[in-house]
Length: 438
Figure (tube, rainbow, N blue to C red):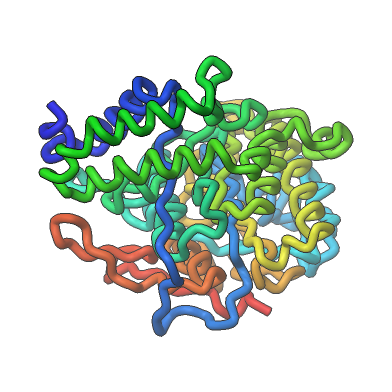
């Protein structure tokens, strides 16, 4: 059975086997996806030797955030803008009245109003956003967080390098890179990292004895089958023990934060996820994703966008301010991204809804060496098409790589020998937006 799992089974089978084995032998449920770091940084002709970013906080606006009602308002075109007013920021741009607190940190932001994509469906759009490739039946591409850990390595060797919360576990996928580079998908941010400590019913002496027994039982098998998966099996145990004994494990417990700070971020899952992200990067986690869904506003767009924008506004603005106060913003790249925008045309029959619109939408960057207070790119007077400096999803992910000092064009091969890049396929390879960096 073990031979089948390790030698022929798929990734899910192998990972589940390791989890089940850990539960049986050690008396603890291990979170899958603990990353084995790669020493050194990936360098190449596309990287920036002066890159400042060490961490990424990726805020995913699932569902297709309306650019027209958030970061690319059209105050002179009321037929497009509807009831939403524009307000000034501390940067050189205007944004929606729904983002009043974000306007106060505008001096730290670079608003990209020229995002464009060819993917107009949610699942395909999110896949592209997270992986720089369109989905294929023949391969599972790594998530960007997995690329970062694989190429940059882990900073804190006792903690995972990649963590996601409030989002689909699929967005933590290591793809063909292998399970050791996958993210740790958390549910609620206030639940911390479950089953990560030694149960009180298992003494330290018994725990060590179980480790020795497990090692003895597996020794012959490991000597006979020295595959990559078997080595990952050993690494999982080592990683789990490190994590259980790490003092930095407290970073996952947002209850340690003063109540006024927790309240400042917002009491919902997104705001608390942003707080968790700050704690994790402070402890040395490379890449953290926090999602806020609910942006699919085919119906009653203005009510829904106002509600979601208020949530985003509180969590994001507090995160930027908190990072800056703690001296973490300079080396942490914060990204707001979504799979596509919404149509300029307001569908009155759907209670003033907006439909999918991949031709033009917005993203936001802050920190990580990005020059704040600026707007990059431009759409036409309706927000329907990009008029200046188009930015593809691959360009955005290449920019994330550039901020980290990684070569987005470096080729890594899948087990079948096919070439892949963090910045996407060769014909659609992303180009970093170098001019937005200070």
